[in-house]
Each structure stands twice: as structure tokens, then as C-alpha cells.
Length: 336
Ligand SMILES: NC(=O)c1ccc[n+]([C@@H]2O[C@H](COP(=O)([O-])OP(=O)(O)OC[C@H]3O[C@@H](n4cnc5c(N)ncnc54)[C@H](O)[C@@H]3O)[C@@H](O)[C@H]2O)c1
Image (cartoon, rainbow, N blue to C red):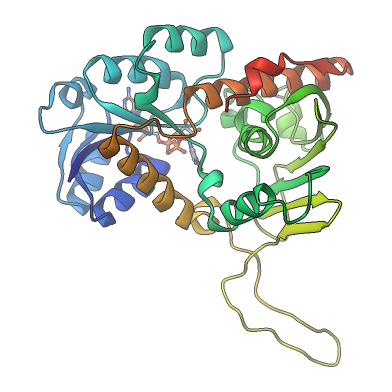
């Protein structure tokens, strides 16, 4: 049984703590958060110890691996310290908002990169994983177009947006990871940002965007994002090739459909947000992490994938600000 600690007992920390507690091959030993009440509440839910000091996690002999769920600016230092303490790491996305700091992290853990996994949960979504496997099997022929629609139900507060690194590094980063996962040979990025929300515009950021990514093979990926969506969490994906397409649609909480004189196929709304829509992903992601650590193999996605997504996010940010099409170093993005 792998012994784990959760660092950061916020929204996503609670999700991971619950997944660890439910995993037959894992045990939650420790929860660390400088806000003592947060650490204690989460730890108590799962029979773990609580601490306000991350150092206690690093020094704990009975902790083999950590899940870093702290705010993004803390990830790099906590990855480096955890690896140095001999712990395996599952770190929430993104690695950092600065490529320079990501590179510092890679240099600091050189030789130990295989001990770090990045929490790009969508790769582990059962439907995404199925589409990925079926594309790889050749079912629709060589991928020609990948289209991702990713809209949040409602925008976070402008105060969050102001320190988020911008929509491309904060939100699009999940979709950019999907593109590297499916295509991986991106050579050019073009992006258009929209400012439809006055509060977000006041921070200088965009609240919606369309990104086009061209690959060396000629396939093109399109990402469509919005910080708001009246129909709920809108998460769709289409892989299109010469033999057909594979489409991921939005699930609803019920399989029941109402048919009447004024409408057909009516059902409940889309699932509200990531905790509901992607609940299965977080469990599958943890399962891959635990299996990799136990087997001593490198989990995927790793730090290089975290870097690749940030390279693309930086390129999209530049393109949206300047109107340029931005070339990217294919070697930096092709991680596998
Ligand atoms: N993969 C996903 O679907 C997903 C979803 C949400 C958030 N995230 C990522 O997870 C991270 C956390 O986001 P969140 O929404 O849970 O934030 P949050 O604000 O809800 O939680 C962060 C927690 O970290 C704690 N913290 C602050 N300083 C700390 C320190 N030095 N050491 C340990 N903990 C500390 C805070 O007290 C808080 O409890 C971010 O990097 C975010 O990008 C990923």
C-alpha cells in the first residue's frame, strides 16, 4: 500500500484526498495546509493526520508520495523539495506560470523527472481515453482535425483572474495538453482573444478565446474557450479523419429524455463543473500514479508535458496580443 500526503487542502486537494481514501492500493497519511482548520477538516474526513507545515510531510518517514494541490506559484518549490526528500510527486497543473521557473524545476530534478506526474486529468477521462485509443488504432484514419470546445459555467472572480497568468495559461492549458496528447507535433499557434466581460477586461485578460494549432503532419487543432456558458460546463471534443469522426458530447445527470408536443429529447442541464464532470478522471489519474510509483515506471503526463503545455500557452498569449502567428519549437512540444 502506497502512503500519501496531500499538500494544500482546498478545492482540488479535497478531491484527491477522497480518491486516495477510496483507492485500495493507497492510504492517506497526512494533509498539510498553512490554514490549520482546512488541514484538520480534510484529514479528519479520511482518518489522516493534519499539519500546518509542509516540512512535516517532507520529513515524514511514513509518506512515500505527495499530491501537490497548493496555489500554482508554490508548485515548483514544493516539487523540488519533495523530490529531494525522496517522495514521488503528483502535482496539479500548471507546473508554473513562467517557463523559466519550469526549466529551473526540470534542472533541479534532473535524473528524477520520472518521479513527477502532472495532473492533466482530462487524459484520464474514460471517454477521452477511449477516443485517443480508437484514433491510435486507425479507426478514423490519420487525424486531420481536432476540435475542442471547453467552456466554464461562470467566470471566477476578477481578483482570481488577475493573478491567474491569463486565460491561456490558466484555462486553455488543459486543452493545449489535449492537443499535445492527440497530436504532439505542433509547429505554429494562432490565437484570438475576446473581452466580453468588463470585469475581466479591466484586469487586461481575455474571457474567451479561439486558438488554432498547426502541426508538422498537416493536422490542425482548434480550441474554443469561454469563461461563461449558460448551458453549464460545456466540454466537447471531435477527432475527425478520412474515415469518420469520434465525438465526445456533454453528459447530463440523467439518461431520461422527455418528448412532447413542443420539444423532443429534453433532459436536465449539463453537469455543473469539473468536480462533477471529471470525477472519474481524478480516480483514474491517481490509479495511474499509484501503479507507476509501485512499478517504478515513469508516469505520463510528466514534467515535460507540463512544460509543453506552457510553451503552447505562452505562444497563444503572444499571438492573441500581437495578432502574429507564432512558431513553436516542435522538439519542445513533442514529448513522446
Ligand atoms: N486539474 C484540475 O481539474 C484542477 C482544478 C482546480 C484547481 N487545479 C489546480 O490546483 C491548484 C489548487 O487550486 P484550488 O482550486 O484547489 O485552490 P484553493 O485555493 O481552493 O486551495 C489551495 C489550498 O492551498 C493552501 N495553501 C496555501 N499556501 C500553501 C502552502 N505553502 N502549502 C500548502 N498549501 C498551501 C490554501 O490554504 C488552500 O487551502 C492550482 O494549481 C490549480 O491550478 C486543478
